[in-house]
Image 1: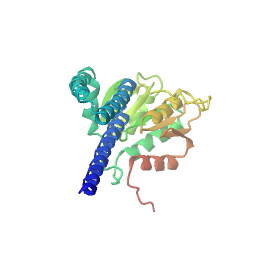
Image 2 (image 1 turned 180 degrees about the vertical axis):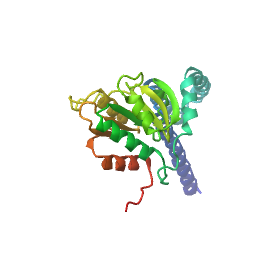
Image 3 (image 1 turned 90 degrees about the horizontal axis):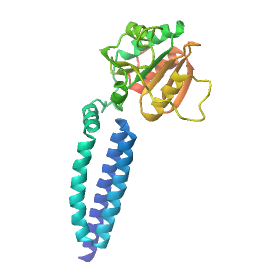
Image 4 (image 1 turned 60 degrees about the vertical axis):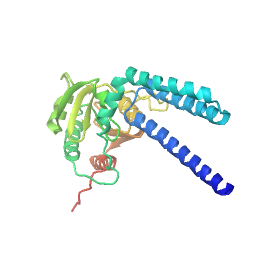
Amino acid sequence: MPFGTDLNETLKMVLEIGVFAMGIYLVLRFLRETRGSGVIRGLTLVLLVGVVVFVLLIRLGGLTRLGLVFDYIGNAFVVGLVVVFQPEIRRAIVHLGDAPLFGRFLKRETKTMQRLLRSVARLSKDRIGALIAIEREGSLANLAETGITIDAELNSYLIESIFYPGTALHDGAIIIRDDRIVAASCLLPLSQNPDVDKRLGTRHRAGLGLSEETDALAIVVSEETGKISAMLGGKLMYDLTLEQLEATIEDALGIRRRSRS
C-alpha cells in the first residue's frame, strides 16, 4: 500500500503545517490586539523564524543530536522569556477576556452612543478641545496606565468637566471601555505618517496615531474650530456632522441601530 501510505503522510504533513501556521497567526494577532511592545513583537518574530529554520534543518537533515540540544535550549529559553516579560504577559492575559468575542456577529445596545454624542455636541459648540479613545477588541490597558485612573460610569457631564480648560486632566485623552471611562489625561502615540496634513494639531495626530497602532476608535474635537473628527484604522474622517459621527460609532462598536420615525 505505498500509495495509501504516501497519501497519509502528505495529509499529516499538511495538517501539521496548518496547525503551525494557525499558531503563528494567533500569536501575532494576540500581540497586535494587546498592543504588545515593539521588543516583544520583534523578539517573537525572530523566534518564530528561528524555530522554523531549526525544525526544517533537523527534519530534513536528520540531525538527531541537534534536535536534542534544541529541545533543551528551547525549553529553557521559553521559561526565561516568561520570567523576563512576566508583567507584559500577565497584563495581556488579564485583558484578553475584555475582547468582545461575539461583537462581530451580535449587535448590542449600549449607553455609550447617546452620552458621547451629547458631550461631543456641547464640546463642539463651546469649542473645547477633546480627545476620546474608545476601546474595541484590542486592549488599551497600556495606554490607560499613562494617565490617571477614573473607572467611572460614562457620563456626558463628566466628559465635559474633564476637558474643560484649566482642569488638571484636560490635556491628553480619555479612554472608554464599554460604558465606563477607564482613565483620563492619557498619552497616545503620535502619527508618524509624512502624508498627514501639517496643519493638524497634536490631538488629531495623536488620534490618528492611535488608530494606526490599534483598532480603537478616536474622536477629536478641535479647540480652534469646534469641528469633529474621527479616526479608525489609520483613516481620518474630518469635519463630521453629529449624524455622521453617530453612524461611525455604530459601525465601529457594532451597536444596534435604533429605528427612526
